Image 1 (tube, rainbow, N blue to C red):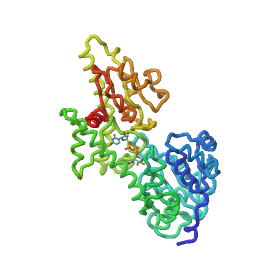
Image 2 (tube, rainbow, N blue to C red; image 1 turned 90 degrees about the vertical axis):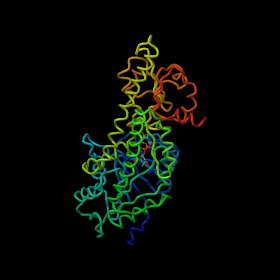
Image 3 (tube, rainbow, N blue to C red; image 1 turned 30 degrees about the vertical axis):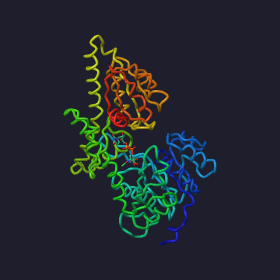
Image 4 (cartoon, rainbow, N blue to C red; image 1 turned 45 degrees about the vertical axis):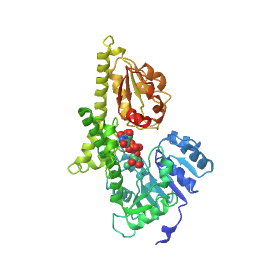
Length: 435
Ligand code: SAJ
């Protein structure tokens, strides 16, 4: 092994201080490594330098405050020289579902002038297969004086490059950053070993070496697997509805089989990963990725199906209460977050459904979201944010969109006249628990 491969990392720069970049910076800094966080957003930089955070993630505020106070983490808008650069910028998709790599390219162009022999560059952003190789090309064009590694050619390069996907679950990021196994996709073996050295400073899970393309596809595979499994559950929920079978009971029974493990249906798939990443396979290989595409379509169709169930529930309520008109029917949506027990509403099917109801329903609309103190602007003039106890006694149609633990205690108070659309099986699971 070469001398620089053993050299300790004295200074690491993390480009992109979002949901992955900031926790990674904080954890690295907590291991007494000097970390320079880089973000194009000045507000983000100022917030972090004042020891605060701009995202919601349990315990992150405490760690960031500690490492900023100790002088181990500093944020800036302008990259500076470092021993390693971790790129953790967003990779959204475009209208045609192809990945938009503009932020990755911007990050590369920003660090290109300050790279020096022996530096390590790691891409963590979820990306289509071949992206790390693209980065090597972009950088080689900017820095003809340096030799960049080439996929699987183990010839000596000046810069080490690897793809190391993040796999942490929002709400448990700090814990999972340390405890999860880490896939280390090296452009070459030397690159992989150098990247392992960096992750070993804070990862307690195993660091498993592979090549760069396998690592890129591994990340997409993990999230596509989950998407396909949820699509299967969502499709079953629609089949069961037609057959008058309780899907939650069905899944409980099917999952008793030792080799069956079906995920849970819901109002659709939200968040910024599972609903996005499978497209990075589909858009590149549309002929081969037929199952992955169909899963995406099934999950994307679920909010529309739920909306129809709400319309049916309003119709049923009017049939049973003929003196009422639709503008006298109160609908309550329980939850806006993209999943249980978090504040995050990004790409949330619950929010999307609530917005659609607000567009088409001319009666009162209540929203219960204990993690919010005010409604998103799209709902502000059209709905009222309520406490759960208050909403539940006044509502005619109750739509359960998120299974926040806080909701579980209230279901025995649902009035008899109320029509319930339960997209998460909360009532079934609660009944089982207390049976
Ligand atoms: N969902 C269901 N039914 C289920 C499980 C989830 O409808 O049985 C829905 C959720 O309600 C939510 C969506 O799927 O709307 C996504 O939630 P999630 O918990 O499945 O995943 P994320 O997006 O919070 O995090 C995923 C994780 N990936 C995997 O578990 C394979 C995480 O480990 C990744 O790091 C993250 O994506 C990412 O950043 O890619």
